[in-house]
Length: 139
Image 1 (cartoon, rainbow, N blue to C red):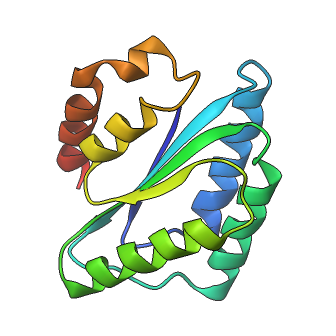
Image 2 (image 1 turned 90 degrees about the horizontal axis):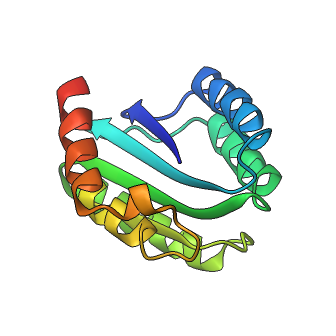
């Protein structure tokens, strides 16, 4: 599983790092599950170059991605609107793999655990709670 945590929004530099790590992992793990978490007091709209690169990476790694969860762990009306927008976008996107948007890391990991082929260690109920606690400590 690839876990990415962004503060308020992603950046091109962080997406480039994510791309490099995904390529390296694919050399030994042909199937990947992704969990992207956005944390902070408010949410920033990603700049156009970030949106474009994010879409490119989604298409580039679609064959190896078994499922992708995005968590907007941000408060306020903007987060509610963004979660709704991303959920709608996931429904109409061209990606062939399951994609969902969540409010908490625990919800996202529980959903990822239901996908076919998910490794047993990711199905453990404590995984999501422990990961959520870890993410909370980093913010």
